[in-house]
Image (cartoon, rainbow, N blue to C red):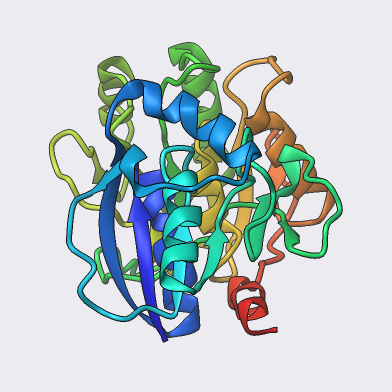
Length: 297
């Protein structure tokens, strides 16, 4: 199978499409797409409702000079182009997220449960974002180990140094004698990075200084992995691979956001535990390959 992946340049979106292709064992090519002008996006909503599709609204970063069996996309800047190319090339269209503001008439839609998708034959509800995890050999502990994954600020959360310190103190107190590893993200604030440096981690990655990603290795080796609540992609990775129990570290008391809704849904289904000082011992994993194969149904 040869898959055409449309990219809006956002790695969180693109990685879901790549994960889908990898779970199918398919060859894929990534082609950037953007609207020709800003107004074209607004126009695409109207034309989509009228079932009118034209390539004049968008531009592709590469020429489509090969034959594809499937077109896959994620992100609002890709949906109209995917529908248009699907019709032009005569191939099925798949979107990795609920295409809000557009008609839900893709051949297949994977929609996260926290988006409350409608019940339709072409919509498959999944608990989290598609992920494909491959250990890289970056972290290999010699003894029992614990992983800590620290994200950063976003539109819903601002990291509280004292809260993070309290959570880290609890982890180190609970897991005396373990190798405790930590990694940060591109969004981690400097003051949180400095806080992390004050702890005796057996393994530490400060992403701003060392741009590697050992998360897959944490999931492969660690007994428990703690993850801050601010990243749906990191949480999705954690529930799709390995045997680690997953503890979600809350960043505030705010429960009116998609991150808390996602985490609470996953906790109810046995995938994670919202850390409150106690341990939930939740390590259920989702089989994304099983979901991906639904495209052949």
